[in-house]
Image 1: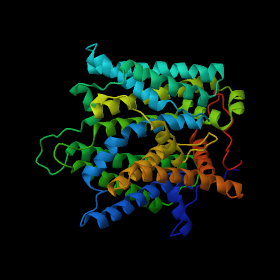
Image 2 (image 1 turned 30 degrees about the vertical axis):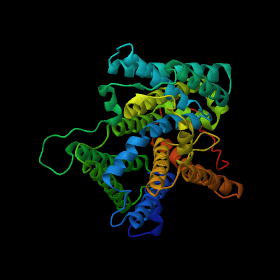
Image 3 (image 1 turned 180 degrees about the vertical axis):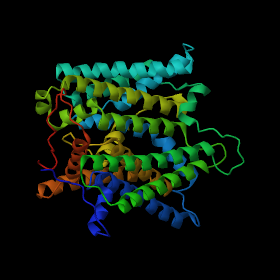
Image 4 (image 1 turned 90 degrees about the vertical axis):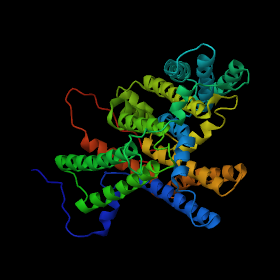
Length: 450
């Protein structure tokens, strides 16, 4: 006997609203909740700066939004690599030092060795890969905890950076600076906005529509319950408005500016790593090892290889972040990278990753990083000092993790664990069975106790 699991609901049902936020697997409440928090923070700072500065707020001006992306893109890039490390149950304290170490080598290679800047970028990525392989070896094959390995790396590479650079500032050429200070070019049309930036925004809207249609088709094919059409429509319309509004702000900034090149690099990395973590065997192995290493090992997952490549990837991302920062600063200095690891780790945890591992997403970490970025930016616009900024950031991180832990201790469903379980159910529903494929046990949900 066959049962049709597809349910069609007619009319308005209040319970359908939650399907917009993931109860049918089309998205995650955690990510929408963090996105809502980000929007609230931006609106509050816009109101505060409006009251402080007069008729116009300072947070949502095109120039300020562009500055936020330029100033914090390297932290967001670090968060992409860090979320994979934390999902595995590790931590990397060396990313700031590795970024600074790579930056000084790349700067010297162009200033003293006359290396062309494109080759210098390749050299920097290679340095990051070698550093990551070194640290990954100790973690994966020697068995030294990643906390200790990367703490040693933080000390070693910070000293190496200052030794190589002799505590001096080394400038970089104009061509190299483009990856940190460049913008999408103008096309010469007599329009009051940057055309490539708005095309990019329209492509983002098209992708949102395509992804929602694809998700509904997969659900229909698998016989699973789909949200009403109006729910999907409202969700896509709201997200499209956000994308188009952001695109308009980037496209209408001061002359000579548009969507920045560091933002293009960040956007490309978000797309690539979101696909890798959600749609590839390697990505599934990361979640499996982080959720239950022993079960993953018994299922045939080579957990040492996963450890090794995740740690190596983190150092490559740190090298890229370091080069973007040096390009934006137009020089490599002895204090580069200081405290970056803390901002990256905070972004990941605010974005919904679990301390015990096995849980986290690239998109959530990016939104968490933007929360930190707009907190820094908004407090600076209000004239607050670094001491107040540091205290507030610490409280935000503590509250973000504390709420989820408290819910678990009180016997209530863990928000993070609940929504990640929904994510895994969607992945299981959309995966087709392959007779010759070795299947692994699902990761254990460490936040919900199931």
